[in-house]
Image (tube, rainbow, N blue to C red; front, side):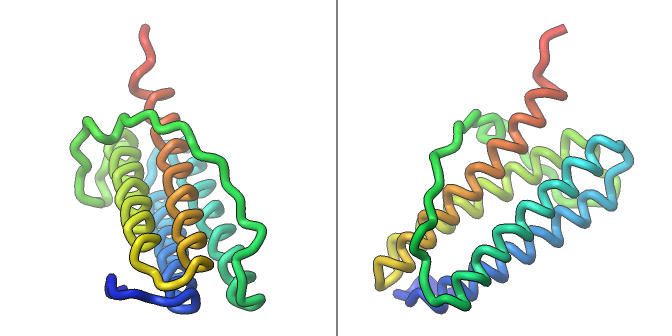
Length: 153
């Protein structure tokens, strides 16, 4: 999506596509996972992205974004100190979590940027909410990373 001023309908269309792509990515990561826990985690994340897509499609049908509220998630800032790998079939669970958290961070930053360039308040609210959703996903992934790879023995 171009960063020119965009309206609510364009913003919504783009967000729906972005959520769909995220769901597909997590589904792919689940299929790649050898670990049962990893597979389950990524399937859950895929379902979360699908839920967001459904919410956005509902807004598209109604033509509004009223009633969307979202609390600010805790940011553990784990991924800010790690280098993500490229997505590959032989990723470890640790690498996949870093990749996923980095992707969620980038999506949140993009949505935050878009909230500043849209030309109406409804689209601004939509992008702000989407940024919060992505930061919540980042928090889920970082919590999973912390649980598996940062525990003291």
